[in-house]
Length: 188
Picture 1: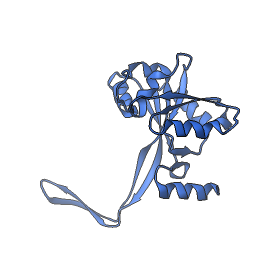
Picture 2: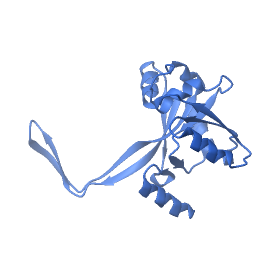
Picture 3: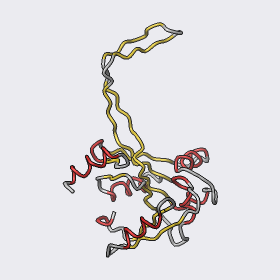
Picture 4: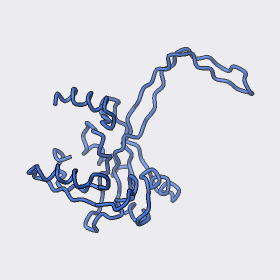
């Protein structure tokens, strides 16, 4: 984010907040990190309700256990050009099913048999571009996920976009194996 000119960061914290703050206090940085302390866990979007009023316009929201390699300016431009309320950054995910897959109809009649199909999906990476005005519908002090915010905005007729990235541009480091793969990728 910093390499794209972003200087102000807000981190919502609950579990092990003191340890996380102590970690970041060890670094001298050109950017600022501010914290939103949750007395109780508020989900992936509940803490956004407590962003200060000066946080306005378009913001990036991201889970802390992902890395997206890409041009954040292009993602932001896509969001603005399409007049989205929220843009979900989604990764292509390819799966090979190592078996023949039966498609059935009428209670068990084979319609088609696909041998070892390759399937592709666009999956939510955990990064979003959000108009700060959308945050006003988040209930105060309640557990509320960003997927609930997206559903509520969609029900209200507001525009939700999807910005696709390649499978290799998204790293989910929330699991130990994937974390080690990412370290190897960056040679850290």
